[in-house]
Image 1 (cartoon, rainbow, N blue to C red):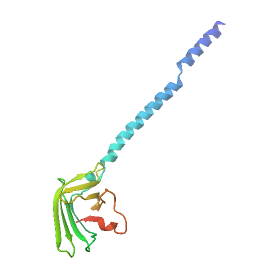
Image 2 (image 1 turned 90 degrees about the vertical axis):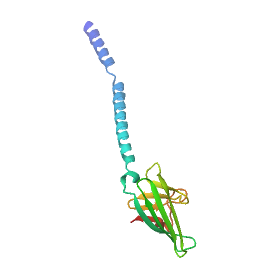
Image 3 (image 1 turned 180 degrees about the vertical axis):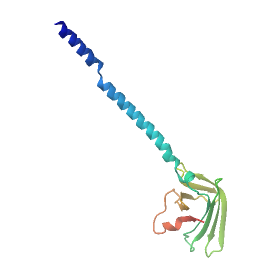
Image 4 (image 1 turned 135 degrees about the horizontal axis):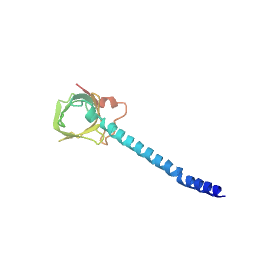
Length: 154
């Protein structure tokens, strides 16, 4: 009987020392922590690539944008590395020209700029060698004339 009691005590001690649920949770926690660490290291890298820091955006862009009462507005916009701009808008067949200059700001995503001039308050989405003018709400212009709002780098 003593052998049976000793065997029972040893078996009980062995079973009590095994706690697979805790080890499973511990492994699960480590896995989750590793996954979070991996995600955190990936997210900043993705956020780092945007128009502001990945493209050669400074330079002069030109387009002829639609005009309600003339054939179009020949527009030339120069963006400088120091976040300043100059814009010239020439109304075709009207003999009228507007010039403005000021600064511009990047949005939080680093893909849209907003001009801060006396009269020029336009927004543009910055792409590879092009600017797409946005509407007053900051949304892309659509419709049959949307291509007329794309400025190409010269």
